[in-house]
Image 1 (tube, rainbow, N blue to C red):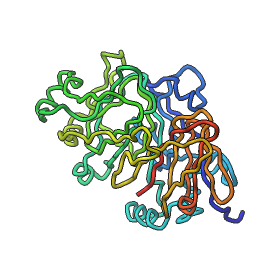
Image 2 (image 1 turned 180 degrees about the vertical axis):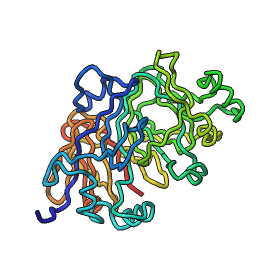
Image 3 (image 1 turned 90 degrees about the horizontal axis):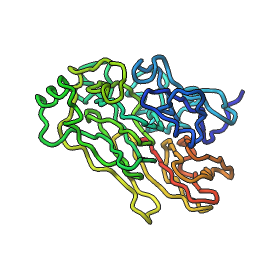
Image 4 (image 1 turned 90 degrees about the vertical axis):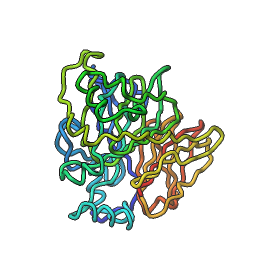
Length: 345
């Protein structure tokens, strides 16, 4: 088969059963079967390896849902299209980071549905990752899509908490007492750099953009609150990675504003946007791949490109290759839609 022209890619979601999960992802087009709670929908994944605790072990590579590449993996699309998909700058940067072969896609994109609190955890700090070859940085951003009344996220440690105080809390099972609880507000985007002690709170559904790593150290697992079985805690590593500084405040798109940057890290930039019915909004990115997630709007939205259009339903996610990002536009159908636009940096 000759190399097909690039087109916006959609993928089959990879659903993860989690003890803390729920059923709300069904409202976002995810096929939830059986009685097990589903906590995560991996929308775009290109991991050659995952940890047993984080991803279930083995590789996790999204499969393309339509078009001439249907059934092939995202990684195969990168091998086929190269700079057409990743762009010259991103492809070069990822090759430098990996130092061999064709790189993986540099983002992991998910929906998370927390029916119960997630474990309190921390990801490797830059210093820890540099000293441990098997530990990888994980910066993540949560845009809150749904939040039950009174729900919170746990983001960082309370002011004045010291390493000794944190260690005492871990040993005595009082970690919640040292956490900074932040009200969960729909539309806010919280960015958690590696080293931030955090947990997604019960009753919150988020869209998550993160760097493709699942190195996680647990400090507390809510076993008494939810009668969960005991899991290993990673006290020494967590203590070595924990950041005691106040995390940055949430980014938000103010009412009446069409779009706004809600998160910017060294790895990605996130924009929250409101799409008006039938009006077109340019993606406005050049030579970099773009991910768009449909967060609100029952009708979904369209991606317009080179005289073609790709419909994306509520809860759908689309990857626009770098070759098309500068000339693609988004438009809602008959109802307004809210989307999250992620640009790879």
